[in-house]
Length: 464
Image (cartoon, rainbow, N blue to C red; front, side, top):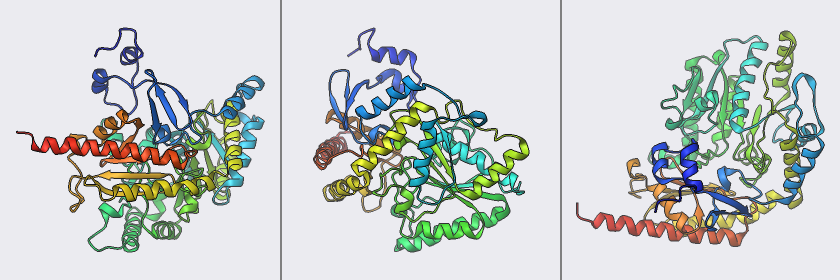
């Protein structure tokens, strides 16, 4: 049915360039227009209700309606709607938020720099690393290592760190000096009979081989998400980060923990770093920092890194990096209130209490399903990977777009889902979700998955 001429769908097609969207397909199919949110649900123009299984973009931790955050933004808009942090200026929301983050950091940190997105935070971290090494007399130590299927954003340098082909093709990326090592995904990456611990040893050895090949005096940093998000919700094998960090320490390579998805309770710990014993030199965070009610991100640096940045800024006369909206008082005030809410509700305790319903529920209900190869996750982040051949662990031909197809079917069952590379279906709901809502979500997913199975079975019997 053709939408009315002045409908939001037609207006959108005529005017909006969408991120992460096939532009030609969008011209044909149009958008799903969301008009309001309540708790873990959002509603479209027709009033249809959907459970948001990935909290928007892994980010709406407190759901889609929280009056305290609205009031915090309103109060700050009335008192000081904007001010900046350039040339030593400041304001209380920025100061309080920095103090709160340092108090909660998973490793000793010294200072906090604010930006507006995870991509900006990771780009800023790269610039800080280069600046730090120049300031400390190591101008050759600039190369950065990330991982295939890692996700660190879409700005120029952050997209280069991101290890996904779609983020590089036609963009002339990655930039020089960025290297990628293997994905720590035991299901697909391990050799036959290789334990998680042995697989982790092999990956740590590979990392060391890359550092030695490039020259330790040229390798500056290693970026990693505690659990890889957009690349597939990939949980590291046992002992992986322990062994990786030993390599980094031997060669004086900084560890940057990208906590943009994993931070603030998602894994069942306050930080993903705490879940896996990571002691980062630099930590980036965003998304749940403000429950995504307003854009804000942060880069935390330890004392060693800060001292290098401070010395460099003295020699140059300024630390020539920052954004107009760095530490903007309104998002900062909302983030302060968000962290207070997390403390008051014992967010980590809530996640731990609800997580078994999701993790065990996914495994018990779907591990044996004919279309499911692996269920993986921790806390309130998980993925179900679809396969054509369970025994061979073989995914469907990407051209068949099986995961996007399941995602579309799920909409008819009242779910908005996120599909991932390799036919993964992500689960990362708002952290306020209840056990009853988790069960409802899994019931709806089961019905959608069974519907897809019926469709594929019918197609296999159809005449060619």
